[in-house]
Each structure stands twice: as structure tokens, then as C-alpha cells.
Length: 217
Image 1 (spheres, helix red, strand yellow):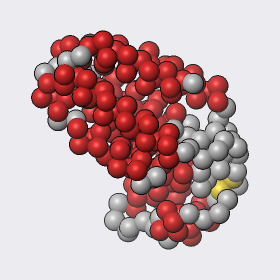
Image 2: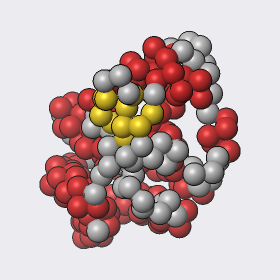
Image 3: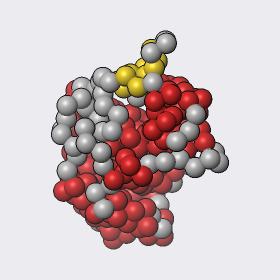
């Protein structure tokens, strides 16, 4: 796979090295720089990111807990190959969790709560316009976390965010996500907020269900 500008610039800072490496690896996974089915060694990745192998191994252990990679003793880490069906199943579970909560919040939260989320929606639009899949993945999860946080249930937010992150790992041999798809997804966030602010509940329900149906497709 050819290098991308994001790949060549993705060096990590010395402070909070493990966290920086974890963020860099997650971004590389979403961007397709680390390919499903391929094996990567800690030392090689450390050289790539300009750090020692230790923080890479620590970050990879976290990614293994998240289901993104599997540990191969004395060999390194293999990026897990996901099927389209697995991703559809994740999207379906997310819908079962998030849709009822969003519809309940639509009627219970004041308009000010939704106005306050406009910057989060704008962040997804900016990442989509810049065609930054990794940045979009983070902004997308941040938007959904902010919505669900209004329910006041930390366990719900944590479980939903974990499912959301798992759904963002790429499918083996799948084409790179298109800019148009990111732009359309971000536009759904903005449209949903405007419907919530207008308290147009039929439109809210339609947009929420369509948003997750698209993820399940």
C-alpha cells in the first residue's frame, strides 16, 4: 500500500508515549496503513513511529483487548480480519442500544443541550471535508458519546463507544472509504441536530433510524 501524507507525518511525541502510540496505531488501522491479516512486530512499528518497542507492545496489548489485533508469541501482532457481516452485526447492536436512548432524549432534553453539540457535529464535517478517515472516526465517536452522555449513564456510554470503535476497524480487501460517504454521514449529524433543535420529532426519528440503517447496510 503506498504511503500517504498522514503516514509519513505520523510521528509521536515523547510525553505520554504509550497514549501517543496507541492513538497513532488506531489512526493507522482506520486509515488502512496496518492491513487486516498482516503481522507487525513491535520493533518495526517502534522504528516507524520513532519510539522504542516497549510502548508499541503496550499499546498493542490494549488493541488486543479491543479486538483489533491478536498477539502472536515471538512473532508480533496480527491485525484481525473482519467480515462485512461482523461489522453489520456490530452496527445492529449499536442501533439496539443507541436508537431508543436518542429518541427518548429527543423529547426530554432542552433545546440548549442540542445547540451545545453543534461544534461536535461541525468537527465531523471538517474531518470529512479534509478527507481524514482517522480524524473522522474520532470525531464521529465524540459526537455519539456527547449525545449519549446526556442520558447520564456512564456504562451505556462506555459500552456504546467500545462497539463504535470496533465497528471502525477496516474489512480486509475493502476499498478505502470515500470522501463522499464521510461528507454524507457528517451531514446526517448536522441535520439531526437541527431537527432536535426544532423539536421536529417525526424527522428526528426518521434521521436516527436512517443513520443506523446506513451503518448496518
